Amino acid sequence: MSTLHTSPDFALSFRVLQPQPARPTALVLLLHGVGGSESNLMDMAAAIAAQQPGTLVVLPRGPLTLGPGQFAWFRVAFGPTGPRIDAAEADSSRLALTRFIGQLQQAHGIAPQHTVVAGFSQGGIMSAGVGLTAPATVAGFGILSGRILPELEPHLAPPAQLAQVQAFVGHGEFDSKLPVAWAERSDQWLGALGVPLQSHRYPIDHGISAAMQADFLAWLQTVLRAG
Image (tube, rainbow, N blue to C red):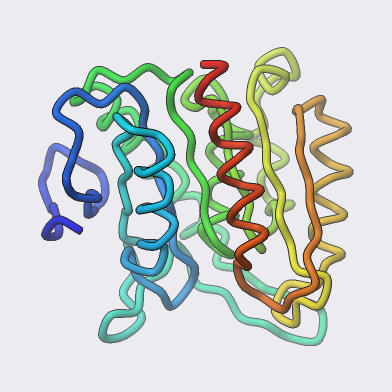
């Protein structure tokens, strides 16, 4: 990875997979989960670069610092009734991420139809937030062991716009952090919204298995080729 980029020209700090394409033709952003860092999805970033030459792979850092090397997009507490989030922080990070994607696209001359955002856990939550509220910004979004925040409902884009963005949902059947019911809710909501969807389940806990990554990479290749 590159060194950490921090600049007033960009809404978020980030790293780029090296070597960086001289003239990228596509852009993929990979978002870490709560308490993680931008280095967590490095293996997936390398796999994308190998599969999709010319793709700029960017790993942003969540704006909240929880501890040394631990970052987040918003604070969340897990209780008997499920996760409780700081909705204001989630909304602020969603807007910052949307701005950041536009800044990257402008800086590198990459169109939205050649852009995909995806993430693990809370990173998947943020990816869905961008895809469902600003679908003109990206061609697709991936939710890897994540969910869609119910708090997004007032901010959803019109159905005609949502029909133009692709979604991927991958979730563990034995997820102990975000039970698989969250993925089923995502499938139902995306279906009701008319978002084209590919959804898979895996015999794993909260994580990304080799099979999940393979399915996601196949989906990503299809989305970027269509763009």
